[in-house]
Amino acid sequence: MPQPTDTRLRRVHGPALLLALILVSVGGGCERAGGPPSDPELRESLGIADHIPIHQVTLSGRGDHSRVFPAHLQVEQGDVVQFRVMDWRVHRVRFSMDEMEPDPSEFLRTTGQASPAPLTELDARLVLTFEGAPPGEYRFVVEGFGDPVEGSIRVRDP
Image (cartoon, rainbow, N blue to C red; front, side):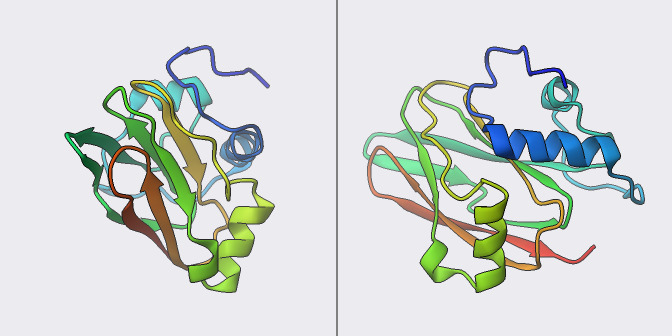
């Protein structure tokens, strides 16, 4: 299986990437009308099928404040979410495992997506797949510079 060669994709984690690539290569499904904007560079680098939506959450800061946009996101099972750093600060996305229902937290653990490494440079990306994810709220905190910022990804049935 080819590895991403784009050096800007620094924080795609092994198990999550492997799962995403396997599921993308064997996944099918109905094509959706509309949907979130796509990231052609990421789609091409990771071989993500055209019918799979890629949602983006940007991480940035100014002064003593961190910014997560959007802080709350709704996706469907099978969607991909990328966290993308838009500044030179270190950002860490941490899932609030104790505040989640058992099914979402177990999904993150079994797919190797529960404890992502910090994003340490401009344009670093954390890519998560929600293929097979149980519906529910996946709460996270972004830590780094300034006060932590909370957010959530709500997965709904397709």
